[in-house]
Image (tube, rainbow, N blue to C red; front, side, top):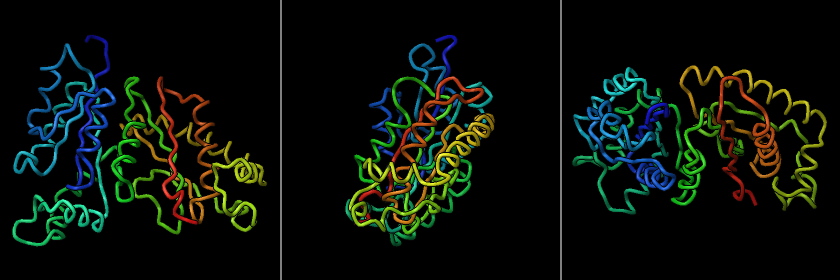
Length: 293
């Protein structure tokens, strides 16, 4: 497949966070997926599949026991071969992981004879450096299987490998800043539709709310400058090998202002050019929409 860009995504992260769900979603999106591969095999993958596939996703985790410790060395060898490599780290809160292991009645891989929380703590310690070097972190704490599949499909759709994938994510500060945010935009300076009785039951996807938010003083200028700012920093992210960017947009409850601003930001980013990029994907998601009634 001469001239075709070769891409490797390593799916790793916490046990119970949703690695298998992501792997299945990527497979549905057209990726060639391999589960629980010994890391030492990574440098040889594209030699074995050179004439058949160009985009491969591999699930590597602590189930590999001592083989897992070879991951950093293997990734370095992959880079030397000129293959674009990305690390996708799947995470979730301890509470969410405990609930999932209890519901399946399966032990944690590092639990041994101790409690589930002990196994989780050991795994976090083991994966700490890997998480820090990840290109993309997906927090599945508040996502069900279908939502996680949808988010994965948006990031790894089947129309080819993108140079930059931008995920615009609205959220509510009262529920915490998203752990996977790269840049955070605070839109609490905008008048809050919550205090207008006829708008309170609506949300940022409704035209009445969206029009009020987008027509508020300084909003248009703010959005224009933010898009310009992101255009200037995006090439730097790409040069540093960071292909997936999450732009988090927050208001108090994640229902009105942040939803409307995130949708508009997605529209604007989809219609501008980014220096040094050929294919850019921009998606929008609303983390906390529906939580505030």
